[in-house]
Image (cartoon, rainbow, N blue to C red; front, side, top):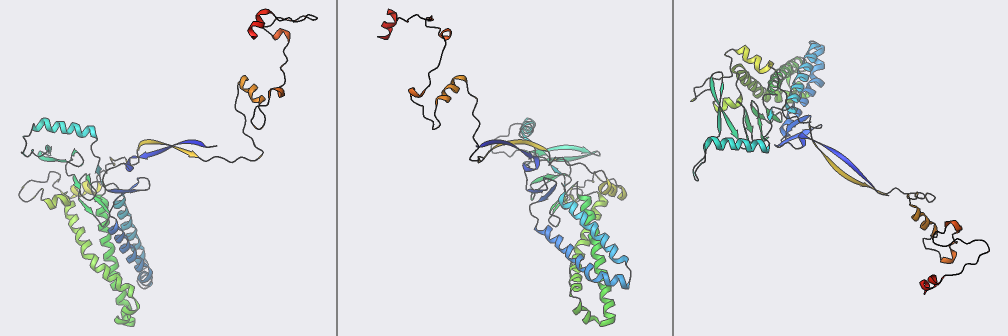
Length: 383
């Protein structure tokens, strides 16, 4: 016996979001599709710290102080926590306009610009917005069908507009924007301190071992230390330099995108309307200000799709029979007249139904001792 079962599948919003992002853990984790360099970042940090904790830390804890591995562990955990927070969070993606909203914006633009003759380039789609007594232009995004908020920009890699867009960082596998910039800054700052820390104590370790067995013998006995020194040496310049550059941007309340485009310097000669003119206030706003919630609502329920599934028949035992269906009085009489093999028995095998004289409505009731004589009308009916 086959059974039709209706099942409802819950579709969440992250499954239908446009753009080039990947989601994990039912939409809780959001990253870019290009994650190869992010895995390289994890490998370098985990590998270097594993070698340091396995070889140098034990020796330095005995020879110098047991606080050396403890402080290294704190820096390592803080750097990993801020890296994962930067990589797995929503950087501030702005939802695209719905079809009705996009059509309404198009009507507004046509009403403002008027009809453009053929062969003539239409005017740029911009809106003027005033911030701190200064005019800021809001540009129209042809992909998202919206006027981007101030300081927002469209990321060509993730194919999304990001609020307070700073840059797309392949090393963390995500865009850096308004909702994860502070974690990105804390990550590169802690990574710089961790790199300097490991590099310094690797040199101390080699110097202490060299006093006992010589410099060349130390290098031969500790190839892991040599590998750590090389990784930290080449990483140090880029990470420390990047941290210094972003410290400069935080002090000015400026983004990397604005610095590259020269939005507040160069030919424009326009002052930054977002800067408070005070380094402390700028740092507090960027790093300690309130964090806005995500506007994507990734785990919100979009719709429920109904699917019908046909399940297989259940086998019955040899002695188990299906219960008879509910039958009417006429069907029950016919069912009783059938044989077990399904064929109808002959007329002679059917027992005559006994009816009393009172149950015969069409015939005349017969009294005892009276003979039944057929009437002429009944004879004509038979012929």
